[in-house]
Image (cartoon, rainbow over all chains, first blue to last red; front, side, top):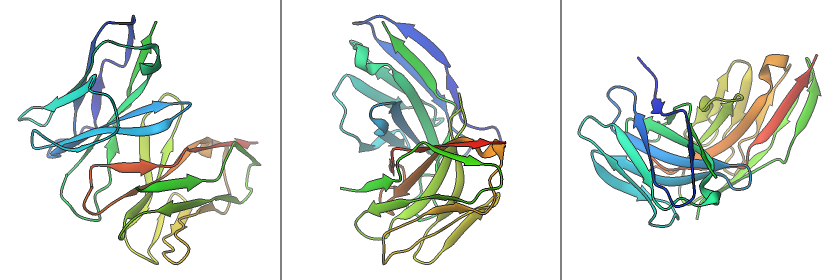
Length: 115
Length: 113
């Protein structure tokens, strides 16, 4: 099976702009989660989508949003970019079933730099 | 809320040394526990997992045992190699929040020849 893919791998934006990141999960997986990774804050959960519905949400401002399509692909959007949004954004997919065996499979990440 | 506390790094070892990275957690109920590894420039890879008390996860010579009484999930390897150099993350996932994992801060391991 192909792994989780994320595009683009690298992005450079300026403050005030908006950005859209894309994630394609493993075939058959219905859950896609997004995480922000920074040296100072570590790995922080943004949100999770399951069958096109947001199922879980972390503590991020409304500038961070996401969606999931019927083929389980997901996008996340950050509007009005701030310098502090510079981070590695990781997408993870899983079957999404509420079971104790539900490990997540991560993509390589999108490195976002805000200037 | 849920939280994971990892041993602070960085950790530097010589090849063939014994490795322990401590991990303790706070969670309601009975979460699943994981160790992930991240190599430079890459995403996270699942290293091992345990889903109930006293379960032992193992992979590539690494082991960790789910200890409910001490709320711990320490990672061990008997003989590390240079190729084990990476960042290691302990994580948990609640049974009713399967798509949301809580991670520790990560421990950077460097193994010298």
